[in-house]
Length: 179
Image 1 (tube, rainbow, N blue to C red):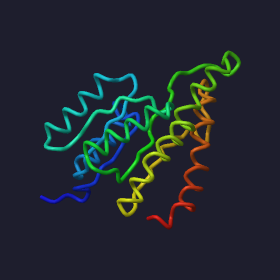
Image 2: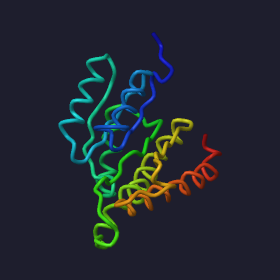
Image 3: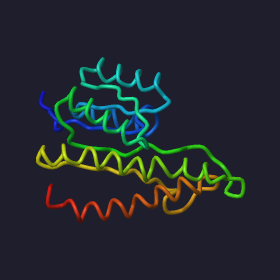
Image 4: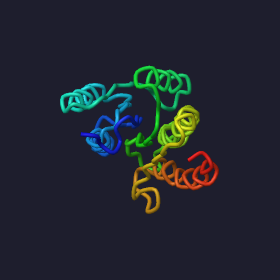
């Protein structure tokens, strides 16, 4: 049976659990090959890849810190090497640790912002040429309620996710000509 996303490849950051996991399973159910990215949840990511493969889908595990440009370059090279292309990017990774703002150090501030801002930049920048070569693609950025409403103990995460709203709007306008 030919599924809607057969032949397409999606990279999902922070895919090992929760929303990322559910997103990976949904893409796989629609026929996409899924590149599962994780940083610290290796066992859960391996389990997800196994579940997709056991259901007849194609999946690969790509452990990488998306805030590290060299790691992202290597991950994207590995995905293209394994699957031949990248059609979609789902930016789901985030820093989940809660720290009250009055106790937050600048290092903790940066830790909370880096996956959403720097990681998004590195992933888009490295995946985009492959999407353009494929004739277009999709970039999905998950923001969450905290991006607009705020979240106690997660000021840094709220700032990171809110910034992604602006990134999404600007990229949509700038990249529309590429499909």
